[in-house]
View 1: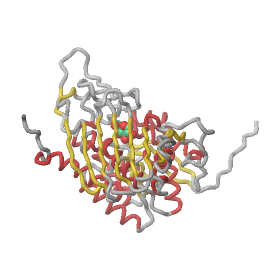
View 2 (view 1 turned 90 degrees about the horizontal axis):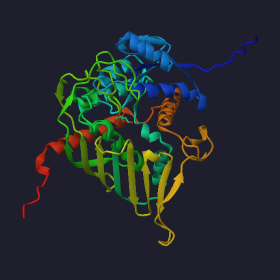
View 3 (view 1 turned 90 degrees about the vertical axis):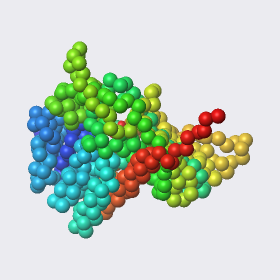
View 4 (view 1 turned 60 degrees about the horizontal axis):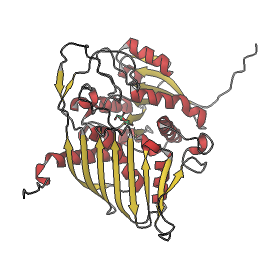
Length: 422
Ligand code: SOE
């Protein structure tokens, strides 16, 4: 039987990924698929997967398509076949891993939020700036920028189709921890995650709003709340939950994504722990161009699964997006006569729409995973061209500063004016 070897003389780009829960799984899908749908100048090679448990990491590497396993991320960074380090771990390890990788001359893509504090983010920006001088680049993974409809929204704002912006109304609504029996996974622990809904999905809301408008939030006023103050401790279990969140033997490496099931012993008394992060954050803000913004990030919006929503109102028109209908963008052209105007639905799957030409014929639609493939494609093209990918660590620090301002405002009760009793 003749075996035809497909010649591929492109340079390779060795990838090493740390973490294999929900983000690790969707990043792996992106690394596996990007070369099949985009004509890249280099060929990504999924060289090694890093995780603490040798057995669980080896199983994940086999399932997700990684060639080798490292049980210490330092060894993964040191590998000669790794030129890129992809950080898919909880936020408390982002700074240490990213700085070490950059100093070792490895390009870095790091999941959001960039860090668990402004100080950590500042150190990461300093390391990224030093590395850039050596041709080593870093990107923070705000994947919703790579939804075709979101990228089209930014394009239309930049083209002036909305005119002067007056309002930005942005929400990120989930409901996966509304059940008090949901365990105290790492996303609900300040030490691991830095904050609750605010840093997890509020970071997306902030970055997406700034990305679409091209303006920066200059000041905020906020409220936060923790609705459930005590939760069962996350038990010890192994295996993939429904959404791919992996819990290792000690139950701590679970991504804490939707579906991380509590596996406490059935029937017996369940140990509990205090929740020290926000369950919901609401804040208002003013953008650098003068627009007013209202924002919401909550994982208690029962009935909303992954509803990242944004509406932008301008003098010449408005647009509206909801990730739960991610292939659609609603646009209102306010320059039309009122009798003909109103929001119309654009199906963002035409070849001239961002990223769409790489996939299916119009109307067939994309999903959550494709936003990561687009993100990885843009990252690889930038690194191969020797230019800084976006969003940069400095962009990630900007979001971190907004997160810190929200927390400071919420902590300062003087900003909240009680309504007088009649
Ligand atoms: C959990 O809220 C989560 O997995 C986030 O961490 C991701 O960033 C978001 O894309 C989906 O929901």
